[in-house]
Length: 273
Image 1: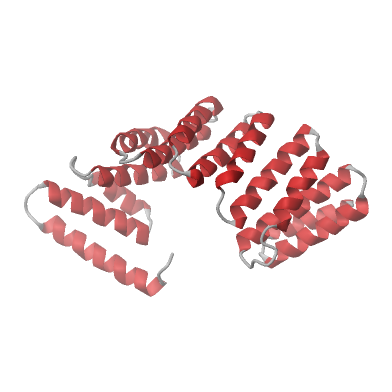
Image 2: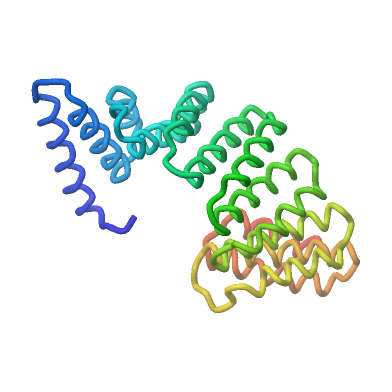
């Protein structure tokens, strides 16, 4: 992300040449296997592709470097999950957990396990994996991130009250206005479902007040969500003027971020108000 396209091409070509040289080399020592795997991981980070994932499945590191083993297996677990191959992803997750060099790395693997379970609509297993990740989490930021994901899963499972508690706890370690705004938006949604419109409005107002002078699209997106949801709350309270005001603000922010769906939703909401 931090380097330009031309630099990426040059870097990728250098890595490919290095890999080709190692492939031609004779011998089967551990150092060569580790280097082949490490170069493959670097190449994937520069130019992610299914071909490099296939390469990494064929060139695994030796058993002497736990950190490299962890990086290799965690990367493959994530990519097989994205491909929809849950069984393969679960296998690499297990290997990544065994090789993880510290509790924070183990927590990340548990989050992956939760995502795999969620893909299979197994909310109980997903929540159990995230609870394990929460116990292992290293630092406030990681605990906040895991707690946020657990809130999402519990909401999907219909456990709205427990979901709200997760989002509340996640506030303490949230870093950045976009992350905190997303938490408050989810809190507001939980309050809406639970029928507490006053608390819902407070949460959406809190989310909308964050990053008012920021130009970041993620911040503006969360502010547009907050304004749109606040408009829905006002609609339910028959405060139509206030609802239109919030929908109009959400429309303005959606246009600024190029969010076509958001623009369409807010135009519809303004029409209903």
